[in-house]
Image 1 (cartoon, rainbow, N blue to C red):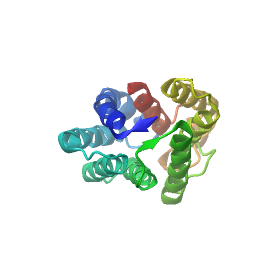
Image 2: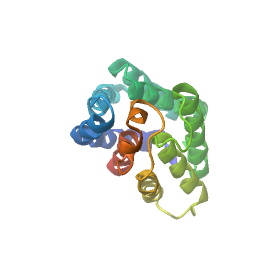
Image 3: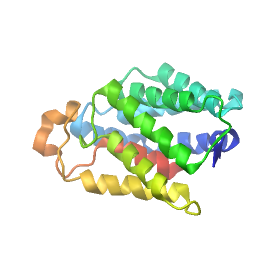
Length: 198
């Protein structure tokens, strides 16, 4: 179950994980993009950290405040997608005190749909959407007594493994075509590091 207190307690760990992963993500992004993914997420994490002392006491409020922090930090494409994802979560949690595992999976499905509409990517394009979809599917089908964080982490790693030998089909990385085969998508790795941080 995810409630406001649990989400608020997880955010400092999320921020620390993002800060730690920034150099790796910049390096990965440099192979396929403009080498700023880590810097972008680092700024987002710093803005979220600044908001921690005055977080609202509801799931909707926390997600909305984090979305506002992310929007303030970056106008980059991935920063925008993070903002959209967090706002989607906020809207999903309106009037809701807690999320069950099934609720969390349903929320992630909404996030995938929202990000696809905003960014133009589809499942199978080798993006963070594929990892999010894998996590949502795994959570929806896992038993209630399974550790949700372990389930999510395993699903995200499996998605990385499954897509590593495929080409990127959208974004700047698509210009490298077959050269992206054998490389991990930086956005998918970013999600993995975020899950690991929890």
